[in-house]
Picture 1 (cartoon, rainbow over the protein chains, first blue to last red):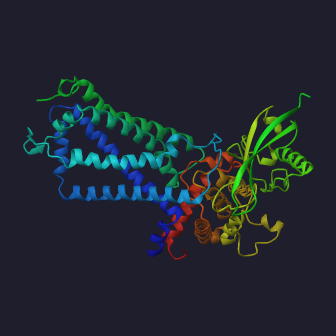
Picture 2 (picture 1 turned 90 degrees about the horizontal axis):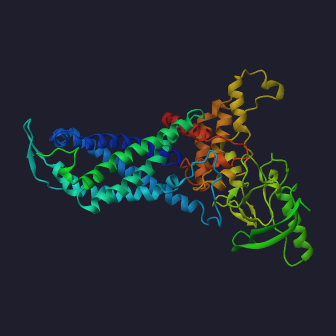
Picture 3 (picture 1 turned 180 degrees about the vertical axis):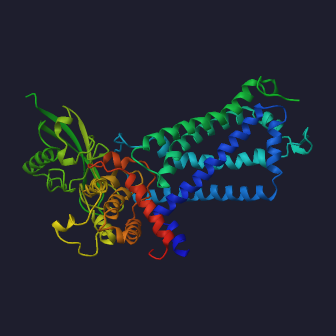
Length: 235
Length: 255
């Protein structure tokens, strides 16, 4: 076991860790987006989904702990890779350009450290705005007193700073996923000449779906005027 | 005079390993479109020697036919220049036109320290090979190779990876200065053949560890290495290296 932990510290091990935690975070954001989209469901759908999560008790704590570990490891390894990269070429080129062809050197792949750090800072603000906020409660039709996250969401995104700030960060999330999805497959050794282009294209489509899915909600609430918006039902 | 033209060069000049370096401007008239890139530099050096003001530009080469892996120039920011699957020595001046400016720099990485001008020390690659890029026992001479059945597809794939000439373009072009494509190609070549298979785990761990020790960066799956590789080696070699490394680490005993 000691040798396995030692192996995780090597170049290959670090990349495997990035890939495994990255896949975990990808699964998380898929569920997160699916939950967010409940805001377009009936009056209580969104709060009921959140209430169901919070009613999981200890299971939720385990999932949250796992998520926190995945986030922190992913960020730690990413920053250490960036740090080693600076040391691996002490003097940069006077002129550098990609050769194209099979290369995936793009703004997305070169900016993983930037988009990653923005997402990390965003995460802290995001938790403060929603998870640790006290939005008041609402009685659900099926019984139970839930946090009124829907009201908080509608109020938050009617402020331009939140509506446009979230939109900007979600665009960066799209870029991060644009390289990350494909990179995770390759890091986890799933790289085959025949399917490589397909996986890369699937990554771009996935990144677009996630970014557009997430940023649609704040923009719709802002421009639609919260409860006035056609797709949102309020009491 | 249709086939001769003028080229402006900005060449990295550096007197020694720890000396400061800088780009120096040169202008070369009468460049012939049939010259190789290295022949163009030969002509420049003749001009420099004739003028007698400074020492000629030092650059690496040996075979000049694209198979030895000695030539190694960063040409306008791309390893081995603009053409795919081409060594610097196989790049011809017909790819340039009158009045073009070409920036020439050495391959840059901590693992490839500059010796002089455009020559870098690539012995880090030798040490990665020494760590495990061989078969420990005598497996016979050429005729014996035919006595061990090897599937055609396996032999072909091993040969594709064996075409690596160790030029170092993968390191030079990698935004992270990673040596993963070189190491991965050597591993993918040796690990899949029956002669190399018994040492697969030990070899993979040893070569990955040596690559780490030499100060090369992490692979972030940019695939720029595949784009600049004069032999077009696929980064599938890197994925395979990771797979074998994880298997070796999980097995434990041989790490």
